[in-house]
Length: 358
Image 1 (cartoon, rainbow, N blue to C red):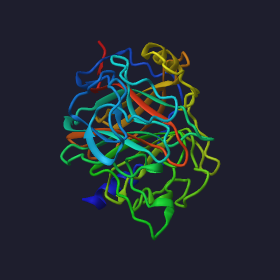
Image 2 (tube, helix red, strand yellow):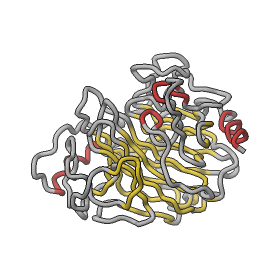
Image 3 (tube, rainbow, N blue to C red):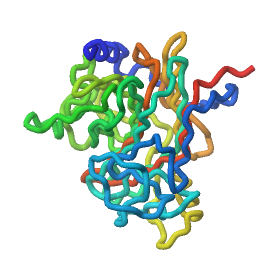
Protein backbone atom coordinates (compact mmCIF):
# COMPACT_ATOMS: atom_id res chain seq x y z
CA UNK A 1 0.00 0.00 0.00
CA UNK A 2 2.82 2.38 0.80
CA UNK A 3 4.42 1.92 -2.64
CA UNK A 4 1.07 2.59 -4.30
CA UNK A 5 0.67 5.80 -2.35
CA UNK A 6 4.11 7.02 -3.40
CA UNK A 7 3.50 6.22 -7.09
CA UNK A 8 0.13 7.99 -7.04
CA UNK A 9 1.66 11.14 -5.58
CA UNK A 10 4.70 11.14 -7.86
CA UNK A 11 2.59 10.72 -10.98
CA UNK A 12 0.89 14.06 -10.38
CA UNK A 13 4.05 15.93 -11.34
CA UNK A 14 6.19 18.38 -9.41
CA UNK A 15 4.69 21.82 -9.92
CA UNK A 16 1.76 20.91 -12.15
CA UNK A 17 -1.13 23.32 -12.63
CA UNK A 18 0.31 26.20 -10.62
CA UNK A 19 -2.16 29.02 -11.20
CA UNK A 20 -1.31 32.65 -11.69
CA UNK A 21 -2.54 35.01 -9.03
CA UNK A 22 -5.97 36.47 -9.54
CA UNK A 23 -9.30 37.12 -7.95
CA UNK A 24 -10.85 33.96 -6.54
CA UNK A 25 -14.18 35.08 -5.17
CA UNK A 26 -16.57 32.31 -4.13
CA UNK A 27 -19.59 34.62 -4.06
CA UNK A 28 -21.24 32.64 -6.88
CA UNK A 29 -21.26 29.45 -4.79
CA UNK A 30 -23.56 28.52 -1.92
CA UNK A 31 -21.62 27.72 1.28
CA UNK A 32 -21.41 24.06 2.18
CA UNK A 33 -22.54 22.59 5.48
CA UNK A 34 -20.23 23.23 8.45
CA UNK A 35 -18.53 20.04 9.64
CA UNK A 36 -16.14 21.62 12.17
CA UNK A 37 -16.03 25.22 13.34
CA UNK A 38 -13.68 26.56 16.01
CA UNK A 39 -12.73 30.22 16.47
CA UNK A 40 -9.97 29.60 19.09
CA UNK A 41 -10.91 32.99 20.60
CA UNK A 42 -12.09 31.66 23.95
CA UNK A 43 -10.50 30.26 27.11
CA UNK A 44 -11.34 26.73 25.93
CA UNK A 45 -11.77 25.01 22.56
CA UNK A 46 -13.59 22.01 21.12
CA UNK A 47 -12.18 19.07 23.12
CA UNK A 48 -11.65 17.11 19.90
CA UNK A 49 -8.66 19.37 19.18
CA UNK A 50 -5.58 17.84 20.82
CA UNK A 51 -2.69 20.16 21.67
CA UNK A 52 0.92 19.15 21.04
CA UNK A 53 4.08 20.80 22.31
CA UNK A 54 3.79 24.59 22.68
CA UNK A 55 0.24 24.87 21.31
CA UNK A 56 -1.97 26.91 23.66
CA UNK A 57 -4.86 29.36 23.87
CA UNK A 58 -4.15 33.03 24.55
CA UNK A 59 -7.80 33.38 25.60
CA UNK A 60 -6.99 31.34 28.73
CA UNK A 61 -4.90 32.49 31.70
CA UNK A 62 -1.25 31.51 31.49
CA UNK A 63 -0.65 27.89 32.47
CA UNK A 64 2.29 25.53 32.90
CA UNK A 65 5.51 25.00 30.99
CA UNK A 66 5.68 23.91 27.34
CA UNK A 67 4.84 20.21 26.97
CA UNK A 68 7.79 19.24 24.78
CA UNK A 69 6.86 16.63 22.15
CA UNK A 70 3.75 15.60 24.09
CA UNK A 71 -0.01 15.77 23.65
CA UNK A 72 -2.19 17.75 26.06
CA UNK A 73 -5.61 19.42 26.29
CA UNK A 74 -5.52 22.95 24.91
CA UNK A 75 -5.13 25.46 27.72
CA UNK A 76 -3.18 28.53 28.77
CA UNK A 77 0.20 29.46 27.33
CA UNK A 78 3.41 29.05 29.31
CA UNK A 79 4.38 31.87 31.70
CA UNK A 80 7.62 32.92 29.98
CA UNK A 81 6.63 34.16 26.51
CA UNK A 82 9.13 35.35 23.91
CA UNK A 83 8.37 38.00 21.31
CA UNK A 84 5.31 40.22 20.80
CA UNK A 85 2.67 37.61 21.62
CA UNK A 86 -1.01 38.50 22.19
CA UNK A 87 -2.01 39.07 25.83
CA UNK A 88 -3.09 36.08 27.91
CA UNK A 89 -6.53 35.71 29.49
CA UNK A 90 -7.94 37.56 26.48
CA UNK A 91 -11.20 35.66 25.86
CA UNK A 92 -13.20 36.32 23.72
CA UNK A 93 -10.32 37.90 21.77
CA UNK A 94 -7.87 35.02 22.01
CA UNK A 95 -5.86 33.01 19.48
CA UNK A 96 -4.51 29.51 19.05
CA UNK A 97 -0.78 30.07 19.55
CA UNK A 98 1.27 27.31 17.97
CA UNK A 99 4.60 28.88 18.97
CA UNK A 100 5.90 32.09 20.43
CA UNK A 101 9.38 33.35 19.47
CA UNK A 102 11.43 31.01 21.64
CA UNK A 103 14.22 29.13 19.86
CA UNK A 104 13.59 25.50 18.87
CA UNK A 105 9.88 25.42 19.73
CA UNK A 106 7.25 23.16 18.14
CA UNK A 107 3.48 23.22 18.36
CA UNK A 108 0.51 21.54 16.69
CA UNK A 109 -3.19 20.84 17.06
CA UNK A 110 -4.65 17.54 15.87
CA UNK A 111 -8.31 16.84 15.13
CA UNK A 112 -8.47 13.07 15.65
CA UNK A 113 -12.09 12.64 14.59
CA UNK A 114 -12.95 11.58 11.02
CA UNK A 115 -15.01 13.84 8.77
CA UNK A 116 -16.47 12.80 5.37
CA UNK A 117 -14.35 13.79 2.39
CA UNK A 118 -15.58 11.82 -0.63
CA UNK A 119 -17.74 14.71 -1.90
CA UNK A 120 -15.15 17.43 -1.31
CA UNK A 121 -14.17 19.85 1.44
CA UNK A 122 -13.43 23.51 2.07
CA UNK A 123 -11.22 24.66 4.96
CA UNK A 124 -10.92 28.37 5.75
CA UNK A 125 -8.67 29.73 8.50
CA UNK A 126 -6.81 32.85 9.56
CA UNK A 127 -3.07 32.63 10.20
CA UNK A 128 -0.39 34.97 11.51
CA UNK A 129 3.38 34.65 11.08
CA UNK A 130 5.16 37.66 12.59
CA UNK A 131 7.32 38.91 15.45
CA UNK A 132 10.65 37.22 14.71
CA UNK A 133 13.39 38.06 17.22
CA UNK A 134 16.15 36.86 14.88
CA UNK A 135 17.52 38.25 11.61
CA UNK A 136 14.96 36.27 9.60
CA UNK A 137 11.67 34.54 10.47
CA UNK A 138 11.11 30.76 10.62
CA UNK A 139 9.79 28.22 10.06
CA UNK A 140 6.19 28.39 8.83
CA UNK A 141 2.70 26.92 9.30
CA UNK A 142 1.22 23.78 7.79
CA UNK A 143 -2.36 22.66 7.36
CA UNK A 144 -2.63 18.94 6.66
CA UNK A 145 -5.15 16.20 6.02
CA UNK A 146 -4.69 12.54 6.95
CA UNK A 147 -6.58 9.34 6.21
CA UNK A 148 -9.56 9.28 8.58
CA UNK A 149 -9.20 5.52 9.13
CA UNK A 150 -5.78 6.00 10.80
CA UNK A 151 -5.28 7.48 14.31
CA UNK A 152 -3.92 11.05 14.26
CA UNK A 153 -1.98 11.18 17.51
CA UNK A 154 1.25 12.98 16.61
CA UNK A 155 2.47 15.37 13.92
CA UNK A 156 5.28 14.61 11.51
CA UNK A 157 8.79 16.03 11.57
CA UNK A 158 9.23 19.73 12.27
CA UNK A 159 11.74 22.26 10.94
CA UNK A 160 11.56 22.32 7.16
CA UNK A 161 9.03 19.48 7.18
CA UNK A 162 6.51 21.73 8.99
CA UNK A 163 4.99 18.93 11.09
CA UNK A 164 3.77 17.00 8.01
CA UNK A 165 6.59 15.33 6.07
CA UNK A 166 9.53 13.15 7.11
CA UNK A 167 13.01 14.48 7.90
CA UNK A 168 16.61 13.33 8.19
CA UNK A 169 18.04 16.28 10.18
CA UNK A 170 20.61 18.24 8.15
CA UNK A 171 20.72 15.33 5.70
CA UNK A 172 23.16 13.59 8.06
CA UNK A 173 23.06 9.81 7.43
CA UNK A 174 24.09 9.22 11.05
CA UNK A 175 21.09 11.18 12.36
CA UNK A 176 17.76 9.72 13.49
CA UNK A 177 15.20 9.68 10.65
CA UNK A 178 12.02 11.36 11.93
CA UNK A 179 8.83 10.01 10.29
CA UNK A 180 6.10 12.10 8.74
CA UNK A 181 2.53 12.19 10.03
CA UNK A 182 0.81 8.79 9.96
CA UNK A 183 -1.54 8.30 7.02
CA UNK A 184 -0.67 11.63 5.47
CA UNK A 185 -2.83 12.59 2.48
CA UNK A 186 -2.18 16.30 1.78
CA UNK A 187 0.07 18.87 3.47
CA UNK A 188 -0.14 22.57 2.58
CA UNK A 189 2.95 24.45 3.76
CA UNK A 190 2.70 28.22 4.27
CA UNK A 191 6.46 28.43 4.27
CA UNK A 192 8.12 31.68 5.29
CA UNK A 193 11.65 30.20 5.54
CA UNK A 194 11.55 27.94 2.48
CA UNK A 195 12.79 24.41 3.26
CA UNK A 196 9.40 22.70 2.74
CA UNK A 197 9.70 23.31 -1.02
CA UNK A 198 13.00 21.43 -1.18
CA UNK A 199 13.66 17.70 -0.86
CA UNK A 200 16.70 18.19 1.34
CA UNK A 201 16.77 16.17 4.58
CA UNK A 202 15.14 13.27 2.65
CA UNK A 203 11.76 14.97 2.28
CA UNK A 204 9.97 13.08 -0.46
CA UNK A 205 12.04 9.96 0.22
CA UNK A 206 11.02 7.20 -2.24
CA UNK A 207 9.20 9.52 -4.69
CA UNK A 208 9.69 9.03 -8.42
CA UNK A 209 9.83 12.77 -9.08
CA UNK A 210 11.65 15.15 -6.80
CA UNK A 211 11.63 18.86 -6.03
CA UNK A 212 13.41 20.96 -8.68
CA UNK A 213 15.38 22.39 -5.75
CA UNK A 214 17.11 19.02 -5.40
CA UNK A 215 17.71 16.64 -2.54
CA UNK A 216 20.71 18.32 -0.90
CA UNK A 217 20.28 20.14 2.40
CA UNK A 218 21.18 23.76 1.65
CA UNK A 219 21.65 27.07 3.42
CA UNK A 220 19.90 29.39 2.80
CA UNK A 221 16.71 27.42 2.12
CA UNK A 222 15.63 27.21 -1.53
CA UNK A 223 12.11 28.63 -1.46
CA UNK A 224 11.18 31.45 0.97
CA UNK A 225 7.62 32.84 0.94
CA UNK A 226 6.32 29.86 -1.04
CA UNK A 227 3.13 27.84 -0.57
CA UNK A 228 3.91 24.18 -1.28
CA UNK A 229 1.62 21.14 -1.43
CA UNK A 230 2.91 17.66 -0.59
CA UNK A 231 1.00 14.43 -1.08
CA UNK A 232 0.43 11.08 0.63
CA UNK A 233 3.04 9.46 2.84
CA UNK A 234 3.62 7.09 5.73
CA UNK A 235 6.60 6.88 8.05
CA UNK A 236 9.78 7.82 6.17
CA UNK A 237 8.40 7.27 2.65
CA UNK A 238 6.33 9.54 0.42
CA UNK A 239 5.11 13.09 1.07
CA UNK A 240 6.00 13.91 -2.55
CA UNK A 241 5.99 17.46 -3.84
CA UNK A 242 2.78 18.15 -5.79
CA UNK A 243 2.81 21.88 -6.52
CA UNK A 244 4.39 25.13 -5.36
CA UNK A 245 4.01 28.86 -5.93
CA UNK A 246 7.14 29.25 -8.02
CA UNK A 247 7.65 29.11 -11.78
CA UNK A 248 11.37 28.49 -11.62
CA UNK A 249 12.84 25.26 -12.98
CA UNK A 250 16.27 26.32 -11.74
CA UNK A 251 17.57 28.49 -8.92
CA UNK A 252 16.72 31.04 -7.71
CA UNK A 253 13.17 29.81 -7.03
CA UNK A 254 11.25 33.04 -6.79
CA UNK A 255 7.80 33.05 -5.23
CA UNK A 256 4.80 33.83 -7.43
CA UNK A 257 2.68 34.85 -4.43
CA UNK A 258 1.05 38.27 -4.88
CA UNK A 259 1.87 39.14 -1.26
CA UNK A 260 3.95 38.13 1.74
CA UNK A 261 2.99 35.38 4.17
CA UNK A 262 4.92 37.16 6.92
CA UNK A 263 3.54 40.20 8.74
CA UNK A 264 5.53 43.24 9.83
CA UNK A 265 4.46 43.53 13.47
CA UNK A 266 7.58 43.58 15.68
CA UNK A 267 6.36 44.92 19.04
CA UNK A 268 3.39 44.52 21.33
CA UNK A 269 2.99 47.27 23.96
CA UNK A 270 3.32 46.28 27.60
CA UNK A 271 -0.06 45.64 29.27
CA UNK A 272 -1.79 45.89 25.89
CA UNK A 273 -5.52 45.27 26.00
CA UNK A 274 -6.95 42.35 23.99
CA UNK A 275 -8.91 44.77 21.80
CA UNK A 276 -5.83 46.86 20.95
CA UNK A 277 -3.73 43.72 20.33
CA UNK A 278 -6.40 42.56 17.91
CA UNK A 279 -6.18 45.85 16.01
CA UNK A 280 -2.38 45.72 15.88
CA UNK A 281 -2.44 42.13 14.58
CA UNK A 282 -5.02 42.74 11.87
CA UNK A 283 -2.58 43.88 9.12
CA UNK A 284 -0.44 40.75 9.68
CA UNK A 285 -3.41 38.41 9.20
CA UNK A 286 -3.60 36.18 6.14
CA UNK A 287 -6.84 34.27 5.49
CA UNK A 288 -6.38 30.95 3.71
CA UNK A 289 -8.96 28.84 1.87
CA UNK A 290 -8.21 25.28 0.73
CA UNK A 291 -10.85 23.52 -1.42
CA UNK A 292 -10.86 19.86 -2.47
CA UNK A 293 -13.13 19.18 -5.45
CA UNK A 294 -12.99 15.46 -6.24
CA UNK A 295 -15.52 15.08 -9.05
CA UNK A 296 -15.23 14.59 -11.96
CA UNK A 297 -11.53 15.57 -12.06
CA UNK A 298 -10.09 15.74 -8.52
CA UNK A 299 -8.34 19.06 -7.95
CA UNK A 300 -7.34 21.24 -5.02
CA UNK A 301 -7.14 25.02 -4.92
CA UNK A 302 -5.50 27.37 -2.43
CA UNK A 303 -6.67 30.99 -2.16
CA UNK A 304 -5.20 33.63 0.17
CA UNK A 305 -6.44 37.04 1.29
CA UNK A 306 -3.29 39.10 1.97
CA UNK A 307 -5.16 41.99 3.64
CA UNK A 308 -4.30 44.22 0.69
CA UNK A 309 -7.84 45.08 -0.38
CA UNK A 310 -7.92 42.57 -3.24
CA UNK A 311 -9.72 39.82 -1.32
CA UNK A 312 -9.00 36.15 -1.97
CA UNK A 313 -6.49 35.48 -4.72
CA UNK A 314 -5.86 32.06 -6.29
CA UNK A 315 -2.28 30.97 -5.64
CA UNK A 316 -2.36 27.21 -6.39
CA UNK A 317 -4.43 24.73 -8.38
CA UNK A 318 -3.29 21.12 -8.76
CA UNK A 319 -4.52 17.57 -9.26
CA UNK A 320 -5.37 15.69 -6.09
CA UNK A 321 -3.71 12.34 -5.39
CA UNK A 322 -6.07 9.40 -5.89
CA UNK A 323 -7.80 7.66 -4.30
CA UNK A 324 -9.21 10.34 -2.01
CA UNK A 325 -9.91 8.89 1.46
CA UNK A 326 -13.58 8.49 2.34
CA UNK A 327 -12.91 10.35 5.60
CA UNK A 328 -10.09 12.60 6.73
CA UNK A 329 -8.65 14.05 9.92
CA UNK A 330 -6.68 17.31 10.01
CA UNK A 331 -4.18 19.41 11.89
CA UNK A 332 -2.09 22.57 12.00
CA UNK A 333 1.59 22.70 12.94
CA UNK A 334 4.41 25.24 13.24
CA UNK A 335 7.92 25.48 14.62
CA UNK A 336 10.92 27.69 15.24
CA UNK A 337 14.60 26.75 15.17
CA UNK A 338 17.74 28.90 15.25
CA UNK A 339 15.40 31.47 13.65
CA UNK A 340 12.12 32.42 15.30
CA UNK A 341 8.60 33.64 14.66
CA UNK A 342 5.19 33.73 16.33
CA UNK A 343 2.57 31.46 14.73
CA UNK A 344 -1.15 31.98 15.39
CA UNK A 345 -4.38 30.44 14.06
CA UNK A 346 -7.95 31.70 14.36
CA UNK A 347 -11.47 31.17 12.97
CA UNK A 348 -11.16 27.72 11.42
CA UNK A 349 -14.16 26.41 9.48
CA UNK A 350 -14.28 23.05 7.71
CA UNK A 351 -17.27 22.69 5.38
CA UNK A 352 -18.52 20.36 2.73
CA UNK A 353 -17.50 21.55 -0.71
CA UNK A 354 -19.45 24.68 -1.71
CA UNK A 355 -22.35 23.97 -4.05
CA UNK A 356 -22.81 25.88 -7.34
CA UNK A 357 -25.18 28.85 -7.02
CA UNK A 358 -28.58 28.93 -8.60
